[in-house]
Image 1 (cartoon, rainbow, N blue to C red):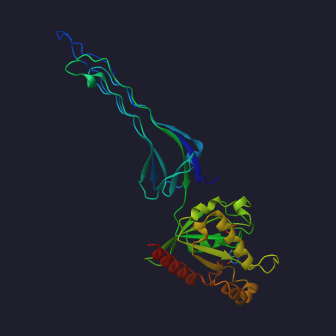
Image 2: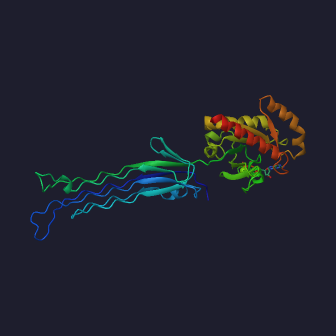
Image 3: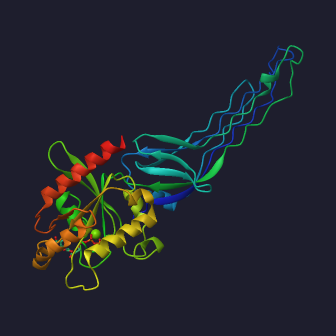
Length: 339
Ligand SMILES: Nc1nc2c(ncn2[C@@H]2O[C@H](COP(=O)(O)OP(=O)(O)OP(=O)(O)O)[C@@H](O)[C@H]2O)c(=O)[nH]1
Ligand SMILES: [Mg+2]
C-alpha cells in the first residue's frame, strides 16, 4: 500500500440549536410565564496529534467530517443538548493548512496538541430570556448561529534529526539499515525506496539520532522526474542532511561532483530551507577496490569546493563510527546555532 502523507478534508461544524418559545401550563397556575429553553451549541471539529499514528491514510478514504447540530431548546425551561465535538486524530508532525488560502493554521508537533479547525454555532435563546417586567409573555426567541465550514489540507512532515539524500542506488537504504533497526527494501535497481523510512541510531547510551531515508532524487525531480520531490517534506525539519554520493567507475557519464551538484540544485528548487541545511557529504561503497583507489582524487575535488568528503562502506561498515560522530557533531553545532 502506498504511504499517504497528504490529505485534504472537508470539515463542517454543527449549527447551534434554536431557542424555544413555550409557556408554563400547569393546573391551578393561571398565566404561567415563559419557559422556552435555549438551544445547545453545535459541535466543533478538532484536529489532534496522536503519537500512535503514523500516516494520514484514513483521510484519503473519508474526506467529509460534519459535526452534529445542537438540540433545540424545549418547553419547561429545558435547554437543548450541546453536540459532541469531532476529533480527527493525526500523526505527530502533521501541519494543518487552509486548503483554499494555503494559510498555515498549525504545526501539530507535540502529542496531544489540538487545533479547532471549525467552530460550532452558538445555541439560540429561548423566550424566557426575553421576559421583562412589562412583557411577561414574550413571543421572542433567537435561532442558533450556523457552524463554520472549510477545507483543510493535512501534510505529514516526519520529525527526523537527519535526512539521508542522494541519487537512486547510492546506498541510502543500506546505510540506514546498518546504523539503525530500520529494515527498508534494498536492491540494485533505482527507486527501490518509494516512501520514507525512519530509523533510530544509538551512538551510545546517551546519544540517539532519528534518521530518515528518503527516495532517490534525480535531475528534474522538482518538475516531476523520477518520484518527484514532494517526499522532501519529510526532511524539512531535519537539522542535518547526509548527502550520499558514489563513484561508479563503470558508468562514464557520471561522477560524484556532478551528482552532488544535481542533487543540490534539486534541493534548491524544492525549498530554500532544505537547500540551506548543513550537509555531511559521504562517499559510500568504499569497499570496492576501484572506489578506494580513486578516493584521494575525489577528496581533493570536494575539498576544492570547500566540502570535506567522508568515506564509508555501508556493506563492510568501514568508516561508519567516525561518520556517525561527524553527523552528531554537525547536528550539535547546527542546533546550538539555531538558538
Ligand atoms: N559494494 C557496495 N554496495 C553497496 C553498498 N551500499 C549499498 N550497496 C548496493 O547498492 C545497491 C543500492 O542500494 P540501496 O541501499 O537500495 O540504494 P538507495 O540509495 O536506497 O536506492 P533508492 O532507494 O533506489 O534511491 C544495492 O545493490 C546495495 O547492495 C556498499 O557500501 N558497498
Ligand atoms: Mg532506498
